Length: 277
Image (cartoon, rainbow, N blue to C red; front, side, top):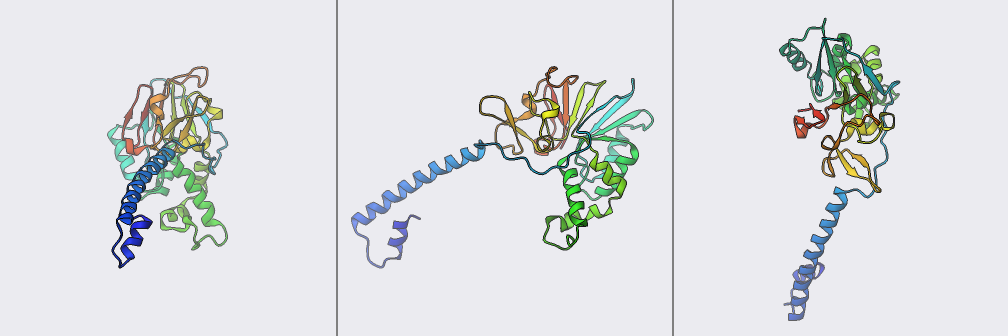
């Protein structure tokens, strides 16, 4: 309600015709202003005025790796596992996985949400699976660091919650495995780039932001041309719709395989495939 209408409602005296007219006009103006401001707010939230500053991320020893698979072998790419180890094993069984001849590549987010996060990390490591770094894998490292710091247990830190209790079961070999996960993996023979969330078109791999490669969903036009990445799907366009092979920017890549964006389900674009469902 408007200030005038609230005052009229609180008054025991009958409003005058001029007060009634003022209240009606105020309500109309208030509604129009609310619609205008709402539209402006929606526009502002859909197209941010500036790129958000980078958030804290772990930097692996080697951000971009190359995997050369054996001639005649098969490469199985798997979407976000999220601690669902039983389902991963069932999937590999359904694929007729043969450890002696097949390569398995995981698109990141091995952990969180499912019931067997620590066991999934150990299984992937012990099986020799290749994997890229997801945002949940990065969060697991921060959680372990926070929970092992003096006074972290039982504190108000978000990492003290039950959601991250599983990180206490990670062994040193598992932590080393997570710390070394690269942001991208280029399958040389297949000419495929594997990344967890995405890559910004026109930007060489060495110049891609760590945050973007683990959290992006969309692209928003930058001032002066080009793109910048958005973690939210509410602004811009899906990055995978816009990505094209650029040999002078990212050599040896014809297709990108990624995960992260489960809300869009299985994505099949001309030059990119999203596996997170």
